[in-house]
Image (cartoon, rainbow, N blue to C red):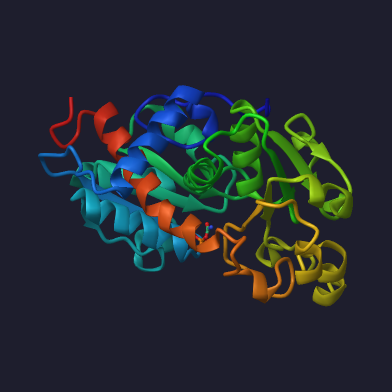
Length: 312
Ligand code: CP
C-alpha cells in the first residue's frame, strides 16, 4: 500500500483507495448501464463547478459532457479570470463557491494531495472529485481504463498489465497500479530506471521492456511529461522511441489478443508510433469514450452519498 493511501471521507472521490473492489465493480456496472442508454436518477437541481488549474482536454471536456448528460447545472469557472489571481486560496475559493450554492467541485491541480486539508478541515459544503493531482492520483482515468480492460477481457484476475514510460511523474500509473493490484491483475513496470518510482515497487515488478512486452495482455504507454521537468535536458525523442517506445516493429512482438492503451495526450512517434494510435490493437479512442460514462457514474455516486438531486 502507498503511504498516502487512506480512505477519504464519504461524499468525495479523490483516489482509488477511496473505493473497495465491490465499489469499483458497482461504478463500472453503472458506467456500462449509462453506455447502454440508462438515464440518471436525479430529480432535483445539482450544481457543479469544474476547477482546472492545469490544462486538460479529455478530463475537462469529458467531465463536462458527463455533467450535461446527468442533467447537472455547470457553474463556469476560469482560474485565470478568478480571484485566485489575487491570491485567494483554494480553500477560500471553495468556501465561496459552496456559499453561492455549488454542490460538487471537480478539481485538477498541480499540487499532490491538494485535497487533504480541504476534506479534513470539514468546513466545506461541496463534494470534491479529484480530476488529477500533480503526480498523485487520477481516479477517473483509472476507472475508465478499468472499464476498457473489463470490456475487453471480462476480468482482471490473472491479467498481466505492463505500464511503460515516465512512471515517477504519472498519476495514471499510481492510480492504476493501486487499483489493478487490488483487483487481482499482475502489474509490471518498464521504462528508464531513473523514471521509476521506488514507492511503486510494492505495487508491481520493474523489468526490461523488451522482455516483458511479449508477456503482457495490456500494454499501457505513458507520456513523457515535459511540463514536470522530465527529459528537458538531453532528451532525444528518437532515441527514447528506439529504447522505450512502442514502435510498429515492437508491437509485432505483442501477445495475440493483447491491447495497447494510452491515457493521452500522446507524443506521437515518441512513446507510441503514430501508426499504432488507431490500430486494431489500440483502445485509445475507446478509453476516451468510456471516460464519459465512468464520470457519470462517479458524479451520480457523489450525489447519492450527499443526498443531492433528490437521491436517497
Ligand atoms: N488523460 C488526461 O488526463 O488527459 P487530459 O490532460 O487531456 O485531461
